[in-house]
Length: 287
Image (cartoon, rainbow, N blue to C red; front, top):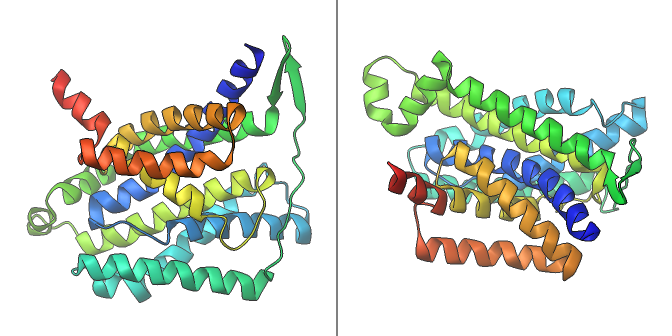
């Protein structure tokens, strides 16, 4: 029973991070109507920058996610201007372009940081509460991730957020009423990249840092987006928490290696059963 509670606590933290990663994918999918296959590379960049800030200037991973998110926001804007923007009206081409962008970024990581694997020390201890081991670093990560999701929900209710949702629903009509859809797409891509980088920064002390570390979070993020509903941010949170708990239980009771396989299986099954998302289907049924 104690192991189950421990896995549940860990799963909630993982699920919150999955939700942050998936929300960026959902924003791009909802507005640009493409899957960003470079999303995992922005996650990796966030982890590398956190490692560099710690080893060079001694910045704690507890707060370095703030500047990391800001820096990667502008990196993602640059990537959009150079790669995605010129192709944004060709959705299939954009998807292929993001795949190439992700592979290019992985090669750049190796050039800058070498193929070595890096590790960061956790800054918060593990405590026992009623016999249950709680990793405070994981708890901190989960709380910050939930805070970010809350801020994202608040933003979507603002005037800018409503414009973003309107453009996602019908870009042509949005342009006729004066909304700069191209600029919204660019800012969306930048914000999504920043969210992925913040997730990578928060997870840097808990993972091995290497050039391809973002691939698994991206696949899991895709599973979350598909289960939660294409472009559905609220669904991403619910599905992310659920998948985080399931993945944690699978890792504790079976094998951590099965988590990746589980995510791929969820993508296939969810697409086969409900292409629009299981969570979205439930919401429509309740209306």
